[in-house]
Structures are given as C-alpha cells and as structure tokens.
Length: 381
Image (cartoon, rainbow, N blue to C red; front, side, top):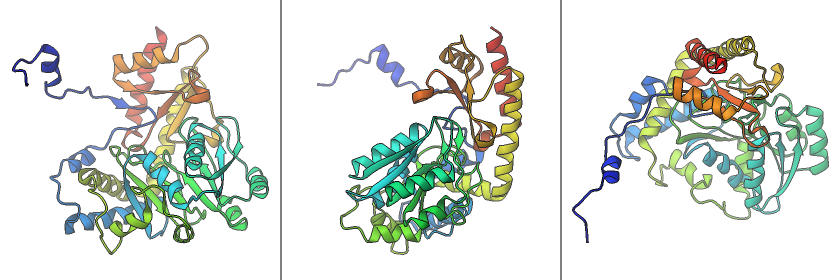
C-alpha cells in the first residue's frame, strides 16, 4: 500500500539537483571544457543511427592521433578507465600465461590483481613508490621470467612518476612478448608514441588529460596483440569487454553489442577535436609549461615534490605533506574554503603526499594561481 504522505527527508531528496562548482585539481576527474559539456547536452540519437556510427569513426581517428598509432582496433570502451584496463588483460590473457607486471605504485598492483583473476601466472618486478624501471632492470626481468605479456604503468597516478617507454618495446620484441601500457594519466598531456615505441596494448580514460567527463575510455590493440587474441584456445572470459565482439560493433559489420552511452561519446568526440585543433604537440607543451609554473610556486611556499624532477608527470604532481601537518585537514580546508579539490595519497603514500592534477582544460596558469593562493592562505593558519 502506497502512503500519501511525504516526510521531510523524502522532500529533500526530491529537491532539484544542486552541486557546488569546484576546481578539480586532484587525480581526476578534471573539469571539462565548456564546449565538451555543451556537446554532451546534444539530443541523443540511436546507437546504430548512421550519424552516430559516423561519430564513432571520428572518435577512432582522433584517438589514433592523440596516441600516435595506426592500430585499426582503436576504440572507446563504454565504461571508466578501469574497464579499459581490464579489457587489455581480459583479451590477451589465458590461464597459465606468464604476465610480468612492473609494480611501483597502486595501479601496478591493480594490474596484478586483474591478471590473477584471469588465471595468469603473475610475476612482478618492483621499485619503491615514486621510482621508475631502467631498461637493464627490465631486460633482466624478461630474461628471468620469459613472459607472454609485460605490463607497465606509464603514468602512475598514485605516485606522480612517469615511466620512460623508449626502448621497452624493442626489448619485448626481442623476448617475444606483448607490451601493455597504462596511459590513464598521460594520454593528452604526456608525449606518447605508441607505434614508434612498439606498444601492443594501451588504455586510458576520458576524465583526465582529455578533459571529458568519465565513462568513455580509450583502448587500443596492435596487430600483434590482435593475433594473440585470435589464437586463443579459450573464449575471452569477460563478455562485455570481449574485443572479438566489440570490434564488430566498431568495425564495418556494425553488429549490435550494447547500447552505447551516446552523450558521453558526443563529449569525447568534442574533447578529442579540441586537442586536434590545438595540436597534440602544443597540448603536451602546454601541460609541461604549466606544471613547471606549479612546481616553482609550490617550492616558493616551502613545499617539496615526492618524485625527482626528471621523472615527474606534467599531469599529476605528488607534493610532500610537511611534517606535523594533517594532510586531510588541509585538503578539506582547501575544498570547503576555496572550492578547490586536491587528492590525498594512496597505499604506501597515504598521509604522506597530496596529489595535484593539472590536466586537460585545467592545465592553465589561472588554475595554478588559484591553487597557490588557496594553499598560501590555508597553510598560513
């Protein structure tokens, strides 16, 4: 029996949506460009409408551009970056495959967990959080483990460290293994040359360097990776992320697979168009210039960075919390008093660092100025 009365709590829940406007300078999401939000408000069409299928083709072309690859199988997964991450593991991993994961942060551990769930024989090479792997270390690990797949995190979101990839693909070809790379916090803001570096699988997200709301996540496979997938002895163990099925939706067949998040794809296409309009190299330079301005300002406040300068990400900076301060309290004050979000540390760096993102549309001098002034006022208290 339905009640005719509505209590005060329910009335509050039924009030029109009211969310504060924040400057999102944490590890993600970042603020989207106004043009991206406007595109997302375009009335939807069907997911098999010729106009939408044409938009899918444009997304594929633009993703190849920002990743600097010619991989035919380059799509946007209907899901967050974690879905695209799992798709890379799910499609090329079979029970018993040796998967070697470079673990130097939180998301390396996530790759370990995922690969294990698909029955892989998971091996690891580790470094302290904030450090990166040298080529000779990777060579030794490949010689020792002889993996089918080497997985590395190019931009470790938990530490702010950038893993160099030059030469790694050549090593993987020498040892006949696939190179899988996490570019979640690098795509759009950090130089990436997937084909030149011989990267076989990569994934990313939409809400960081691309400056788009989360939910439509870039994914790409090289012909070598596709060949391994096609030679599987077993079906891909994840139906939703099975590229043997999804490739027929994104390819010439246009076979129905799922109802795509139409409006999110509108937004992603516009975000990628803006990057192409700016020029990917100009986009990379903008991120580097603005983060150097940020580093200088943080140092002027007496703060230090966790990662040595050579390997710092231009998209995400880990700032050491001064001894005697409660990082969570400071971040909360910055949020509530200045409407600016910064992130805390994960895993081994919890309570030790703040994570400051300067990504996509937010990579601007005015974003840096606002944050530095907010930190100056809060720390002065």
